[in-house]
Image 1 (spheres, rainbow, N blue to C red):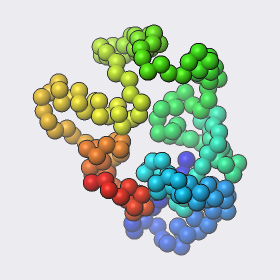
Image 2 (cartoon, one colour):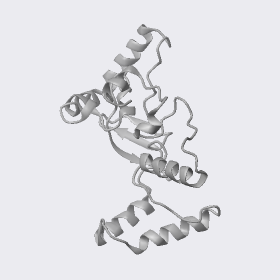
Image 3 (cartoon, one colour):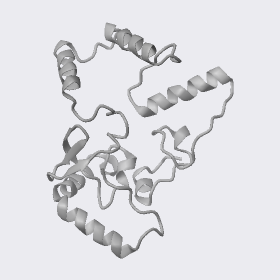
Length: 191
């Protein structure tokens, strides 16, 4: 996807300006979408990490395998696979069909369903050290659950976190994350 913007002191302003001009020429619709998004999304994005993209975040419309296509028709190699959850790539046919088949039955019940324990049983069979499974809707929620579990098991109130790394939106793990100036403006109010 888009490379992170250079940090303070990296590169020259003329090289950054030249790169920004080149990106703007190739991604005009993304620029228009970003302007429109600023009218309804805080910071123009739904994730602070995206706010740091230069000259603006790209907007994508489809993906297949390891490739994504932006709204301007440019194709990119998504080496991060949406920051990790797309280990099988974008829109693998077998996953698309399985999701469509389930969606024809129901999207959610807000109650228990047999697929929950069937998936949990498969996961515990595949991961020998996993006795039980706890599902999460987001990475942030998964990190919060892992920290609660670690505190409960160890009896220790503190945990170790890698400085400068992003571990989700929760205030307790945003400590020592080093966002760009643009990301800071987009996330006003976080400690």
